[in-house]
Length: 259
Length: 261
Image 1 (cartoon, helix red, strand yellow):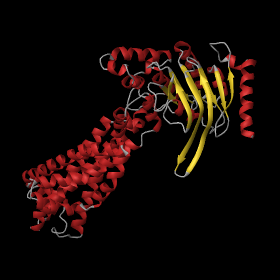
Image 2 (image 1 turned 90 degrees about the vertical axis):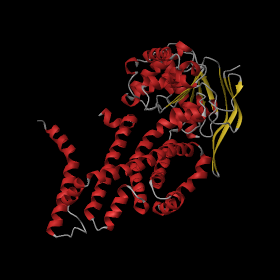
Image 3 (image 1 turned 180 degrees about the vertical axis):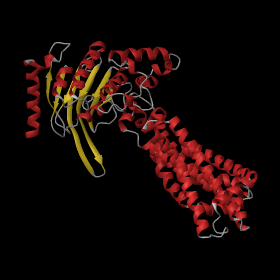
């Protein structure tokens, strides 16, 4: 086997080795310092609970996943529209940007009780919280992509007699795509935070609710199993976004292709 | 009447309270089917002239006329090529060259239905600049010279009556640049569009043009216009013959005065 192949294999194994190392250190620390389970359960205990309560975990994960994804998809659609509007028009920009920043500065946790009053407990507040929390980075990135078009590229199209709409569709949108996909990787993890916050503050389903109720029963292993489940879903969805990014905007990764 | 006509055109850039007079009283005309170059010391408003003729910038005073109509807004269907090739990295070379067809009338209407025909035309044009084998490649897979060739193809595919070149060969190495002069000349001999070339390379200006206009330093005025009546097609060897060299020296001396003054 060549040296290059071995390095490549090691590179692929690195994330798994890092996770394994973390778990081993955690387990060892729990045993050595005799940490009570109610404070910090050992990973093996968490894993055992994970297996034992797999069906209920799966059910609650599914609830969290679909509320997150619906909020995420709405945020992509809305974020693209608003981002394009803000990036394309200085008037929309100056009108809405301060408002957006103000809105983004609001702690989203504070919104959930208000949503509860308006809508009640359930999936809808989780969807809305996920949407609200991941909307902003998408808008800002799409607007940035549009605003940083090379002036010469715009001039070429203008001198051909292109309308504003044509400039937007021929240059603006393709140019904004790498920015959009970059923001999606941030947005999907934020969306999980949003839906879980909502479930924690006032839900009757989902991983957030599971963790809260397990915590109330001093059932730390189940709480940690919930945490692990969210982390796994987050990594998986991030990977999906990263894959979509590579597929859709191959040209933006030209460096890797040429070499 | 001249195809491109500038009458006492001036332009003042305004940035807040600061004003910069880029161009003062530029007056010259280019007849239809002729190739003109604008040369001058750096910062003399050469590129500004390009933007004024194509209507991308409105003149502060004076009049710009193109093809018998006064230019008040971006005029349509002009071919333009800048020093930066500005090809779109998400399109293949062929799709980049076809871009004007998707925008300029009457091709815009026909483009969807007759894509193959237009692609054939673009391939033929790419063939004349030696890029037929690279049509499916992306711009970032091409060398700088190849990118600039595709850029020229994109500027010419819709057969514009007016081609504006803003230092299109400026960023290339000397060999590639001289090679592209030849490409440019044969494209012009073939199609006889009206050409405006902004450059600071005097050999390039003399090689390609029928007339060379010399600008003063900022704020720019046209201080000298020289007819180049050398026979065409011109060869690279001809650029070292005494008559050619004399013209280049004459232009250089005039520009030198602007630096000293």
